[in-house]
Length: 59
Image 1 (cartoon, rainbow, N blue to C red):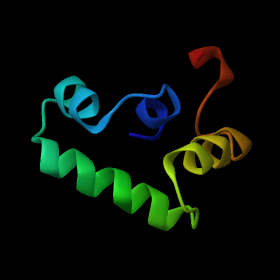
Image 2: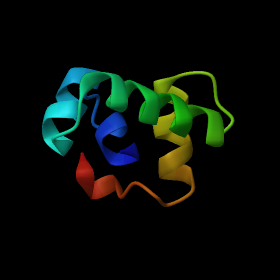
Image 3: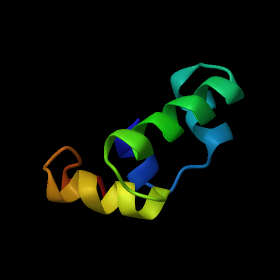
């Protein structure tokens, strides 16, 4: 999930990639943002990279 967020994918794109419903993707994204204690997707991506959860080779 975090890798897809860091790639700049939208909720519908994440849902399609993971074969889940759109509202489910939205919930998961919100949970990632909450658990990382950030306020938006961009900050979540940066925090994920800083913590080593998102490899920079992804980009």
